[in-house]
Image (cartoon, rainbow, N blue to C red):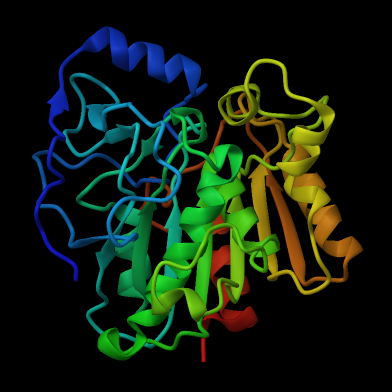
Amino acid sequence: MFNRRLLLGLGLAAAVPKVASAQSNAQASGQEGLPQAGGVAGLRPPLPRQEIWPGNAPGGEKVTVEQRVVLRKPDGDPNDTAFYNIRKPWLSYRAPAKPNGGAVLIAPGGGYVRIAASLAGGDLDQWLADEGYHVFTLFYRLPADGWAAGPDVALQDVQRSIRVIRSRANELKLDPERLAVMGFSAGGHVAGLAATRFAEASYAPADAADALSAKPAVVALCYPVITMMEPYPHKGSLKEMLGPNPTEAARLHSSIEKHVPADAAPAYVCGTTDDPAVPMQNAILAYEAFKAQKVASELHLYEGATHGFPLRDKAGRLQPWAVGALAFMERHGLKA
């Protein structure tokens, strides 16, 4: 069940050097995690949460890292946090005031170094909840922490999360078929895994939920990490996933564009033309791979030299990428 307790062992760290180093490793530009409309003063209460695995996550016998959370900017918004070395991945949940039966699972970014998201949620999940959707945010495990699944550890977590959400359909009064996944930056890679490798048995069944489908109805891949192939990988994600000297086989295995089946989930893909962190060719490769399989897809590249974009403009209006993403997802299974 969801609860409002903060995770044990997580405290806001004030170690500024650690924050600066992590920002460099993730090639962050302030938009690596989830799009925001602006900071909110004061620490907000955490959303209800649920650990996705019964007991310990699979393949953790050699994991020795300690889970922690830091402020992304030492003197900034206390809700603007980043989580490292996640041992027990979880979903946060924002309930809609007027539910329409659909659900959205969000995968934040962080360069596979960290998860850049807040326990209190933010503008993105609030907007989707205001539209009537049950909104879940996945705080997934990271591949360099020693998990037996290595680069597939996030695949395990996103598959399990989709199944857990579906297992609670009756309780939450949601339609298990109307489930979308939105991913941002490295979270776009996680969403891409959900869209393309849903049929893989990435872990041994843990309970009855694992008999349910792991395929989302539709995905949105926003300024996504897609390829591990030269010359366009995001260098930080490549190193975190595959180490400093990856083989060609390892690169192929973790490149989304190499694994798009004919029954992949429809994909909305967006980014900026001069992204300084994740080359825009990642978005293009994703779109081309989905189109080659005749899977419904759209590609939108917006002018700009930024990694990501805000949810709203200065006048408070939704940005075109958000309007387009929701419209696409609603056309392809999110809306009844």
